[in-house]
Amino acid sequence: MSALNMKLTRLLYDSRRTVWILVTMGALLVVSAVVAGKVWQRYGPKKPVLTEVQKDLVGRWMPQVLADLKEKRGTNTAAIILHLANDTSDHLTDTLRSEVQRTGYLTVNPKTFTSVIQTADEELQRALNLQVTSPDSLDKACARARGLGAPLVMFGKVHRLEGTSSEAQLDVEVCLAEIASKTVLHQRRYVIDWKPAVVEAAVLRDALARLSPAERFLAWSVGALVLPVLMLPVVRSVVRRKSNEANAILLGCLTAADAAGAYLLLGGGVGSALGVILLLFLTALAFVYNMRIMVFALTRLGG
Image: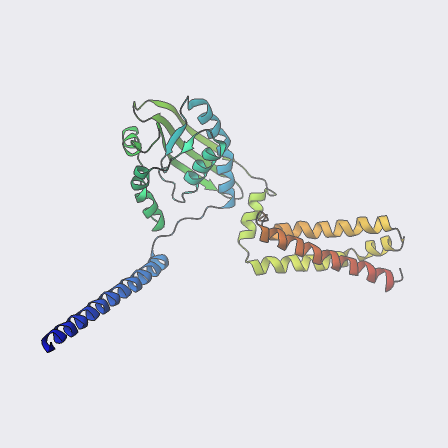
């Protein structure tokens, strides 16, 4: 009986030791993975960030390529859109895929078990901020897209994507082909030149991007505070008429100017609920301030 107890005790000790070793090794692996991930994020490659002008240029290209796809797709309903070569930011590829899917012209990269396995390499390269490898010929594109659940494959190359506040150019080539027969249905090189105006929304967004949120808010605050003060003679002249209609028009114009400034402050980014709430809040602040200035002009300046 004593020998049996000793064996059981020894077995329990070995089991606890094994579990402890496994837990320790697992913890070390997790910590090592976290540290390696942080180091890679800090010192690894970075994806280039497109300017607003460049993004707007891509948006101008979309209607052309979508119209061509609608005409050349034939009776096919799905396509594998491979990553465009030299698309270092991934923006053109992502925009092309999402826009084609949105229009409903073609189902893009249908999700099947095989396609998930085959496209895992692109997801890994994206996760590591590496430039995604892309096929440079029809044979390679068809070979990669074969068996992924679609009859068509689309691939291409970005030759140039440049955009500043003075000029922008997009040069991209795409090819649409049938995978089984390797028949090219559409191939075109799109070259778009654009000279944006100074007041273009994309140019303004690029200019605002150089300022921090605090600097933008400070600039708006100064403008909102100074505008009615500079217009004080006009404000006084209007309020002295004691016309509700004239007062309302003046208050509306001042507040509208402040609201426009707040919209620029947000960079036009009021698509989210938070952006809309912030815009309404700043507009309300400006409304109250402008109304107080008008009351001051009426009661303290001899209105």
